[in-house]
Image (spheres, rainbow, N blue to C red):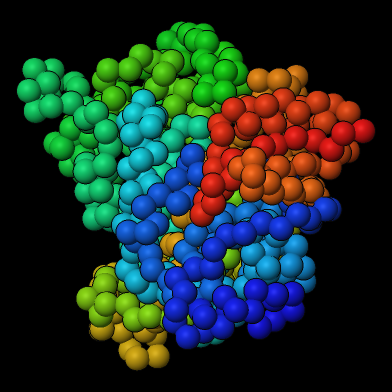
Length: 562
């Protein structure tokens, strides 16, 4: 039964299939490790951790769906980033937090997550949460940020396709997650891809159809017909999604988009730029020099081009089909994409966003289009050969500028130049041959057309999707608590650090069945200022009158007196 298991009768009953989750029963406990994470429970429930869990998941045994979801949410907030690290944590202490005698062992927890993922309810649960979050903040759901994140894989189980990893500045094997966030960085949902079709393809095939169904308060057909510039919602992404064909396709569905312009651009006169004051989502104000023109892009459609003038005179160009917003707002929503970048950085550091979650493999459809490895190899050879040619031509030009004076040196100079010309001509011929070879090789193939040794599988998606969705809920819960704390803080950036300290602090747990309360008494924090802020947070949490799931106990929060 494992160390610390004392509820023997219930475990025996569960072993024979007579129990669908053990009843939650708290015992008094002092100095419970990670007891402070219970302060996050009201926010976890408010952000949908147990949203429609009975409809989407079924589990038999001692540990039920509620236990697993609560435990995974608590682990994320307590910064226990992987299940393997549970081996070094006291199971009984964490069991006190859940109202059980102990938490499941690592292999049991993996098995429970696998059962929940295999039931087919993960997608429905995640989609329901996304819809609920959008309905709660329709003004944020109308302006969506899209970006990809690569989860690198260094193993040898399957030859995943390579893709460029910006944070590493290398092409590495892995899978790509495409995240949809709001302007404050909070996630709505994620789409995973092992085949790496690119942001444009994912946008067309999976993201846009889903957004058309889920984004709330979209204008009616009559409103769209009445005003030719009204759009359903706007999607903001980086240069990877730049495509005039895509912009036109989206606008035909009355979806606005915004990104940076690709290619070489001519500088606009400095007289066109004016100072504008921009206000970001967190209230920060800054002044930018901006200019705007209407541009007939690629001979396909009219767009707005907004340029930002940098301190060194560099002009950053932004393309937008949002014809309703004013110039400062267009610039603000593009140049504050750092909110999503910061979210990636924070999630990688604190929530193990790039963890694979599972090493179980599943097949990829043979009709999936992938980059032809032969075409990729030729592209690499062409780039290498072009670099050699450029270097040789530069050396040849330098020698021409430095003319010799005496006759003997002139002969040596002519011989050397003749040799360099032959090398350049040879490189040019080789480069032309490689380019011709690439024209004859298809850029993409289906997975079934690849040689058997180059075909790949993908890591099991449902379990990773389940864990990622729980982490989304945990992040949103932490964000809600941080926003509450910031109202009382002079240095608002310290709110999350204070919450991390609270979640990892010991607490005393006192259940009172007669009074119907469950008191979580947090130990003192590192300084008096933190204690004061925690006391104010406790007042707000007590006002929620949260009932611990599976019990009739109303939770009360306070600090240890002294």
